[in-house]
Image (cartoon, rainbow, N blue to C red; front, side, top):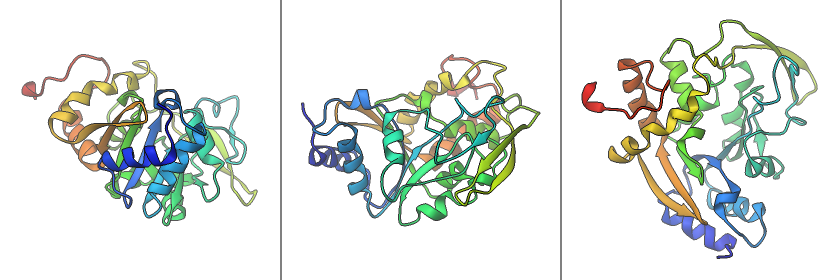
Length: 259
């Protein structure tokens, strides 16, 4: 099927998302399928539908900001998390937070307030930063054609619960170029790879989120779409982590009856 903006808006509406919601979208354009104007059709649909809400996408740069490239310039660094996020950044009215490795781009009436202060974060998913604000704002996280392996805020849950061996002890001496042109120091702890990329195991909780009605499945374009209620998901995962801090170091199924 060839999808138009109106087709996608109707599917977004049918998914249960409300126009006033705060939404954070992880996405795969390939999974969405063929639209009448490529990526722009997808963005037009989401931006129009959430005109009275707050629409956000990850604009992460952890793949390029590292010991060999210590300066984050939000006007130059491209996201490493997909084509839809990259196109979203170019849209009029979209603002980008100044987190050097895990920035978020946003559009909506409270977008400026939402991104404010993210440059003060010294960890990838600070409780006081944008990912913490997604929790505070009772947001919905949408996985548009991608799995919960993309569920960045679970890194936040591990940070906020002080799970050991998730963050480096050392600080990477990063710098941020503010929109004013001023360059400031931002020493940053990074994700520790002691157990490899543990985000590859985040999808092990998918069926449990469905079971507890924290998440539900829909379809937008051709994409299987999972919609999670952020606050309930983090509270649930935090409970699991407090009982088993090593929950995500492997892909073994979670057995709730053992907790």
